[in-house]
Length: 473
Ligand code: FAD
Image (cartoon, rainbow, N blue to C red; front, top):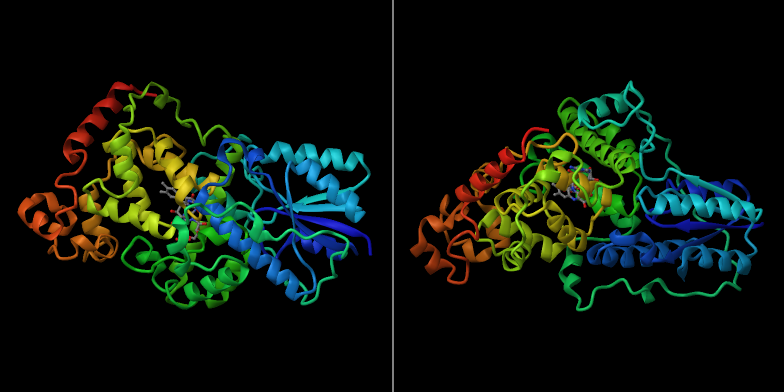
């Protein structure tokens, strides 16, 4: 059988893998290859936590391939050269891949496709990660959506869930002449190994994704609709890093959840699929507004008086020492696990972009380095949404009060106590705002900041004043 390179990127799985399937159905021997070329991803090359995840995911993928008689070839970029060498060494007649949609990779991949075709290869790319191509849905005027509700209405009107495809139990062997380089040798793990504590919470790889889905379907799915905002509970699927790395196709999630639909959980399944819809919306926006990882979508904010970051305060936010417990708990969860609950992401992001009035990109960068699910589309949308600068954003003047948010969503202060054990001895409601009783705080947690790094009322007032000054759109 002729060989076909199956070029793997953010699609580190075997089931529901359109490129692998195309190679097999085309009568080729798939030669699965991963090319390490972070420099080509520009300013948004994967961050440290997501690299650490990818390292483990690649090892898991190689093991899965080997258990089926194949293996993963690992190469170093530049991508065009590495692919050319692989083609020459394997005599491959075709190259297949699943598309990536980041602004730097799209034009690079289009150029590669053209070059390879000119050299007589069969080249095909596929949608391996979304229900809709980012350019597929359009407003009646033919433009991009900037508001989620009509986007989602259009998506539902054209909703179609692809059939599942299980990779065969045996795959043809990769030619023995192709040299091995182990996935474990890639320089993806952080030094020093700050990620060590992550891995008790996660199992990167396709089997881990499947397991997370099963745990969710058996547990947090019931009540997802109402519990997803509670950081003190396991109320969500925690599938985001698996989805980001493509260890599971979103349509497999939907196909697995739909048969579980009953009288009680319809609203939960709908709410969950809607969140997957936000992921689609994020990719739609990133495609149409490729500048938004670095620039405000709303031009009004070009005149906005962002504060010059004080590096000490920025570090206090990054390391969970702002003196505002719900934010510090979130930032410490992030540091210890590579993940933060969505509600707390919103509160922490609001504090940075409104109370501190730092441009949201300072926060987006920190999340980019520290989140295992760091995803350019979702992170950009999340930050611009909270900061009020993006599409369908919460208006800038709606400033989250972190104390009332904590009282509402971490009702018993359990999340705060989990990540800030030094505050666990404080009674409620003091745990939400410990500066209100300085003596009690000093006794319980002598090392915890006495006051928030920025007074909540003063920060809010300054943010609103700056907003008013920036004028109407
Ligand atoms: P679930 O509630 O189980 O949701 C299921 C899936 O839907 C998620 O895995 C995710 O793929 C998708 N999803 C859920 N909420 C959103 C959303 N608001 N926007 C887009 N997709 C969503 N998500 C990332 O995957 N990567 C990021 O880098 C990222 N950065 C964020 C930054 C900020 C400031 C904010 C406010 C949100 C960010 N999110 C990001 C969105 C969201 O917080 C995470 O997707 C979610 O917390 C992941 O947990 P889960 O898988 O348990 O979510």
